[in-house]
Image (tube, rainbow, N blue to C red; front, side, top):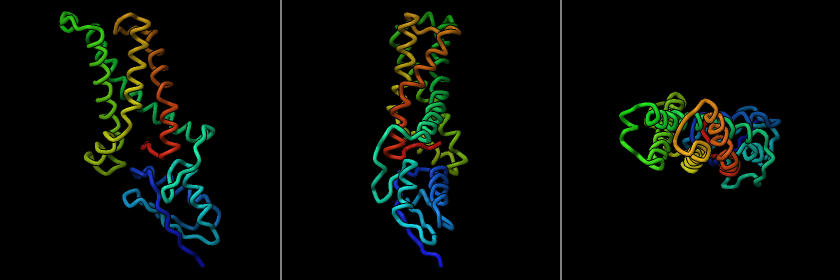
Length: 216
């Protein structure tokens, strides 16, 4: 005979989150099914002999909260490092499109170069455009997952600006330190990408591990 337990799960923002929670619950011994809703923030589990503690631990272990409580934070979770690296990668791709495009435009288009913008002005514009293209890419990725562009944009715009600003700042600072001005060469781009990836990655791990906030 199956019993039912309902958990209040925090940190879910999309269908991908619901799927991860459902997979984690169904991996627990004795669980026959799990119905998870990120809209309602609930997980209804049918089981035979599974404890509420074991079910809650399985959800907390992948970065979500149960009844307002998360797993005790630590830096040793390989799966969260992997997931946060994946999140950081997509953010980096989105930011780089606008950032590099802006720098290249001022570098190679004579009209823009003749405007006489300062290095700081170009860098700030590159950072702004990078954040905008990152949000646009996140929205495109999430459209199918969220069931429409409006909800996808809402989730994308709500993703961490701290991570994107840290990424943009580190990439542009690296460019200025190495090149002396906003300028792209074939060998400075990989360095900028590496620095842009590594700078926000620990923060993204912390955010995912502690609050379950990620959407890829």
